[in-house]
Length: 192
Image (cartoon, rainbow, N blue to C red; front, side, top):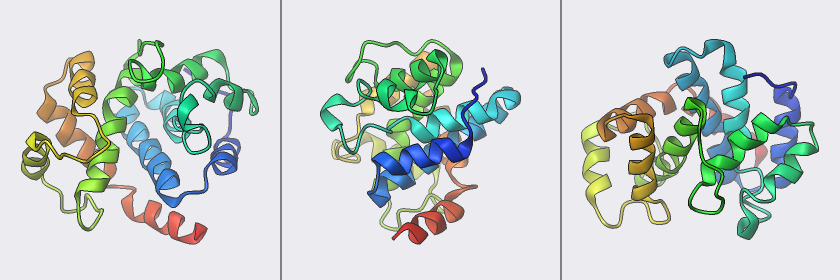
């Protein structure tokens, strides 16, 4: 899939509706993870599309939390987002706030990794995945207090939708988060 949206347009829209450093950090992290999976899964030609969907997946969350994934189409149209782009953004809320089902592999990856990325960021005292091991994440995942506010069921469903073992999703997502972590932290620090 392709989009006419530029990274500059997408980032400007993100910042227009999100000021909290955590939300911006999450958006940048999801962007990087989506780009990683695009390359890893053989969709390198679609890396920009995957990344921009990741960057804007929560565009409406900070200002319109009760309308999350419902308000997003209106905001995305401000930058000329195509229907396929809007669908890809909205469907990550399937079963939580919308009935738009993830269909494409890219949409399933976003659905599966979004909650996990948020959980991984919260569970480490250092808020870093640089030294996070799969065994540590698996152990925490079993704990009922696992990353308050994140749904283990959504993460499990995401793995199932992709046809992946949970360990594969957890391990690959940790690996996907590592390369951009320092640059993201630096970018967020400059916002403050």
